[in-house]
Amino acid sequence: MKITDVKCAIIGQNPVVRITTDEGIDGFGQAESTKPYLKPHVLFYKQWLLGADPTNVERVMLRIRRMGSFKPWGSAVSAIEMALWDIAGKAAGLPVYKLLGGKVRDKVRVYNGSVRFPMNGYTPEDYAENMAKMKASPENFSIIKQGIGFHSPMPSRVPNFFYGDVESGAPHSNRGLLTERGLKHVIACVEAMKDVLGDEVGLALDCGPGWMPTDVIRLARALEPLNIMWLEDTINGDYNPYVLADVYRDITMSTSTPIHTGEQIYLRHNFKELIERQAVNIIGPDPADVGGIAELKWIAEYADLHGILMAPHGTFDGLIGLAALVHAAAVMPQNYIAFEYPTGKPEWWYDIVEGLPNPIVKDSLIEVWDRPGLGVTFKVEAARQYLAEEDKDFFD
Ligand SMILES: [Mg+2]
Image (cartoon, rainbow, N blue to C red; front, side):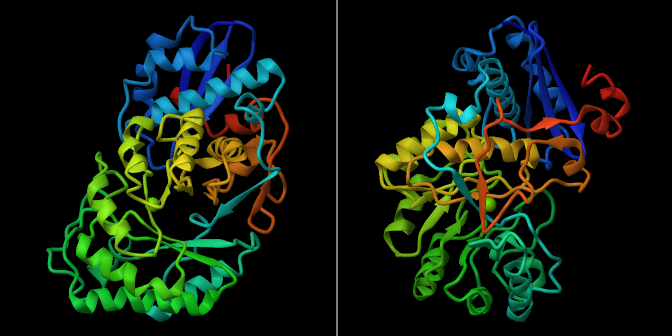
């Protein structure tokens, strides 16, 4: 089998990759909805993919994997990897999880980082009210993540929050030392959310990047009695092209509150120091940024050898990305906690694909399906209407 074409269309906001072959089998992959600018980057790799046998996924990836980087520049490589697995599975008549070694679990746990309700403000009362809505959502999530601190509008909306100047611009522009009032505000908001959740639902906190290490240690220690699931991306994280494993290790050694990072990190090589030095307790690579499904499985296995847990990122990965997450989660070792459940946005995404269970999530779990490849495919005639003029031949 040979690759005959590599295409990319922006459907809604998600870049979607389609790889075609000389045997009539095609495969799909998807990148985050936050990256509608990615199409030229996907097409950049086409020159090295044409003519290769897509069922030798690893051999094809050796051609392009090193030509990527931290988020957002590992996304195109990652979406291509998903599409290769989709083809390999369809060609073998097997679900992708079988090609990755077989499933460890029949149902995969997800956490809520995507089913959101508008915030009325950023006081403890607002956080409690919002958390009550998420707790009541029909997916019955067993873990809910909320943004606080520098991963929220607090720097601009809470007066005297930190000692820096409030910046606007690219995501996560604010960084600095918190005032005592700012730190107390964060803690009060977390306590208000825990009052709503009790010990029925786990609370994870997306915090940054932007924190100073001393503040993280104070926050983590103050929250120890609350048994928080994890503190994500404090000193570093989303969209920062570096790791800072040594600084993370200092924080992790200073508290019993689990410390989490990794959604922006590309490839196993860049997790090496974080894992080998046991610099954090939980890592969250995203299959749509880290280099793909098999890359994520490799990292999960290596993390397990070092006592590190897995809670992969995924909120913007869309419904093809959801399929990739389900297959990856099915094959991870028992250090797997849950992945961040992505929703289809706009809502019509649910009308243009088939293969997902209905409802998708029951009691915070998704049943692993057995359709060949990723098992989620386009209803081509329904999907065509959402193609931009320049992408009209995407399904041809
Ligand atoms: Mg995050």
